[in-house]
Image (cartoon, rainbow, N blue to C red; front, top):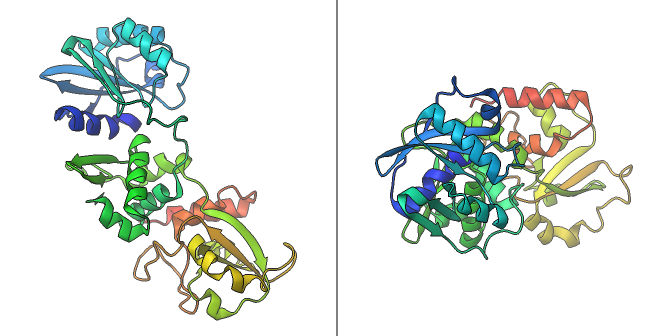
Length: 349
C-alpha cells in the first residue's frame, strides 16, 4: 500500500467515524496489468462489510468518472466485493459526476460518499489549498527529516514538536497536515490534541522506504549562497560544514579548497550587518562560501550519532546526510552523483 492508502485513509475514517478499517494489501495476481499500473489496491471492512479500496497512482492523473466506473466494475468482478474509490483530491465537476453515477468515493480530509451505507459526509471546501501540495514547506521538511535522523516514530503533540524543530506550534500544526496530505505520516486527533505518527502501531517504520517515497516532495534547503573573504572564526562558530566539503567527509570525494559553511535564516538575520564587509563581489572571489538554509542546518546534528563521520568542533559539525543530498542532488557532476549515492548507501536504515 502506498500514498493515500497508507495513512490518510485510515486516519480520516478513524477521525470521522471511529472505525478501524484494518487495511491490508490486495493479492493482485488476478488483476489485469493495466489496473495494477493505474491503482494502489487494499482490502478492508466498514461496518462489517468487506471492501476493496483503489487509489490512483501518482502518474495516473487523467482519470474520469467514466473510467473509474468501468475499472470499478472490473475490480468488483475480480474480488467479489464492493470497490471504493479513494483520491487525494477531486475537482468539483468530477465530484458532481461521481455522485450522479453513485460511485462510492473517499477524499481523506474532504468528503466521504458511500451511498450503500447511507453516508454522505462533506466538509468545508473553502479552506482547501488552491493547488495540490507538491513540495513540503521548510517547516514540514524539517519535521520530516528530524523524524528520520532521530528515528522518532511519533510526535505526541505540536508543542513538543515545536521545541525540537524551533517553529511555532501553529506552524507545526500546518506542517503536520502537509505530511498527512502527502501520505508521509498520519495525524491522530484526540480532542484538541494532534499527534503525528510515521508508522502503524503493529509494524516498525520502514525508514528507507519512507525516505524514498518522500524524495520527490523534498526541496533543497539552500535558499541562497554567496562568496566570502576570510571570515572571522568567531562569526562562524555556530556554522556547519556543508557543500562538497561535507560530502568529502561522508565519501571518498576530494575536498575542495573553497570551504562551504551552512547557516540558518535566523543566524543570517542576526549577523547580516557583520557580514557586509566579508561578502566578496563575485563567485570567482573569496575563499569561502556561505549558504543560507531555510531551516537550521544544526537542527539534526548530534556528535554521538552514527550518521556523523568527521568532527570539526572549532566550527560546529557537518550538515546531516539527508539535507546534504537534497542540496547537491542536481549537481551536474558524475563524481558528485556517485559520492552522494555512496553516502546514502552507508546509512544504517
